[in-house]
Image 1 (cartoon, rainbow, N blue to C red):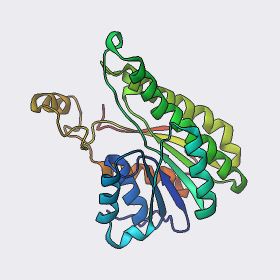
Image 2 (cartoon, rainbow, N blue to C red):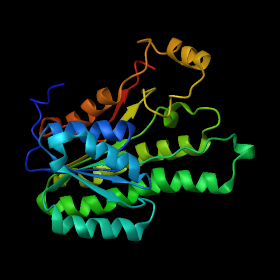
Image 3 (tube, helix red, strand yellow):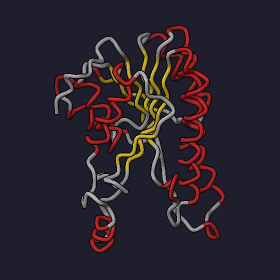
Length: 250
């Protein structure tokens, strides 16, 4: 796909969870559009190195950083390094996320806390420090990958749904706080997307899900990435506090 309309040369983009699935597609699209990309990840070294190896010559614009977005000290350390290495940082994509599904009555306390810590608190930590970097330049873009689960609520996902609803609420509040500084804050909400998280779906369940999607198919990571690129562009400067659904019409 062409990125001709978007030019991110001389911009550094941080993509959390940027080496697998949707995050990998987002990182790749930004690289194709000329950006320097700092892709973060929490644990999977092999997947990160595989992603970099797959890029060929584009790998020169990719920097990998391993840390836990739910640990404030690690987030602070990451941003201190970013100050030294990438002073043209102007786009943050909050894509890190985990799921630990269970019905509420049987949910482990640690599974509730961990999902909220990574998905919501991690988003807060990353956004808080990004805003402080963006404000002096009176420019910045924050895009958070949320989910229809936060709107509809799905059985067995109370923790995940709560974290995703919280992301949207935080986005709307933050967008109002920083608008006067030229910073926009938005969400992209993917529905069923063909990633490794859906690879082990039973065939019957897959068919049931597809039947409920008006477009009658799952989406692709690249279709989500294209929407992220748009919201991160200068052309999207009058869009803030919004949620862009990429869900086939759910």
